Length: 134
Image 1: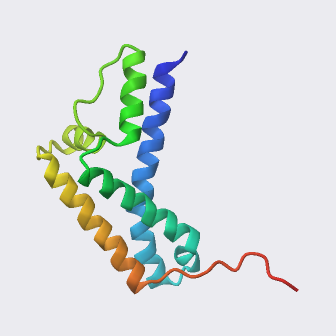
Image 2: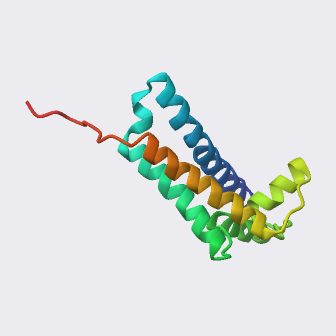
C-alpha cells in the first residue's frame, strides 16, 4: 500500500483546512467591506465556524488533531519519521523557528475562534436562497 502517498495527501488536506480557517476569516472581513455576498452564505459560515471550533476544542482538550494522528500513522507505516508534537507546532517551528509551549497554541486557537465569533456577530450570515419557487 502506498502509505507515503496517502500521508502526503493527508498533509495537503491538512494544509487546505488551515488555509480555509485562516483565509475564511480574511474573506469574511474583506468580502463584507467589498460587498461580496458569498462570504455571508450560511453554509460557508457554518463550515468555517465549525472548523475553528473543532480546532479550539481539541486544543483545549489536549487532543492531537486527527489529521496529524492519521498522517503520523501513515508515515510510520511507510517507515518514515513522525511528528513529535502537533502539526502546527511542528511546521511553525520548522518555518519560523518558533519554540513555544502547547498552551501558547491553545491560546492562539482560542483567540482566533473569538475573532471568528466576532465576525459572525458583526457580519451575520445570510440564508442561502437556493432554488426559488415559482
